[in-house]
Image (cartoon, rainbow, N blue to C red; front, side, top):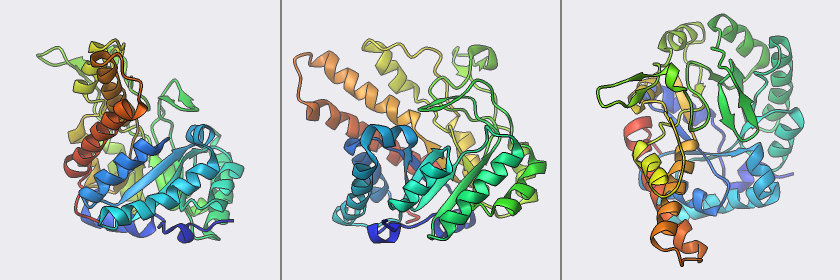
Length: 330
């Protein structure tokens, strides 16, 4: 068994408290490989931002749990080499069973999410409470979820979104002892978050998604004041990178994300963790497609994964500075 402190990691409790007080959100970026981790850490060190490295169940299957643990240990050492130490959390994203959460805790994760939102309410409470009891015994923080986000992210699939019911949050937090709560107020997983029918068009013909339900967020804040809130599915789907993908042979149609100004508004509330994954995938894919199109004889992975890493770093630096407000908060 490996305790996260042995790896130099921190849990999310203290950095969430600081984020709520400072009116910013901690970036939670998913990674599956070395280039993604390099980009995340370089971006956060250079902007002096705390960071949550997120690992999904799909990433654990892809990269191997042991390798990921060793990558996390290397991440903290890498941060020191980059010259400015920032708080690093290693977090399980969308854990769906107690066994998965336990395995991550036993292997050095400092934070886990148990997503019981697809279960009936009482089952969600019981499952979340079980994870919390084990996690807290090891100093690990736990994120629960109420409400369901539509879209696709690895093994997480939902056709329809179900908004979080504010009348349930106080009871859920009290019964489970959870440390943070993921809510559903209109964000969505994936690059195709909304259908054209759900959107309106501006004067340039660009699709505009429906606004986030800040009224639900405000009601939740009234019921559990000062409690850490999490937004999943918060990629903005940068259209310049979508255009690059499509220019060089891709087919990302009707890709619409969450407007960045709405995320900035959310980050000034009790929303202290914002998850971003699809934007990173889109940026890396755009860079790789560009290299392949311009240099069709290229076969060295470093020559296309390197530019992908660099573009991803640039994207995340921008997020930290102008969307999440986390730059300079480490």
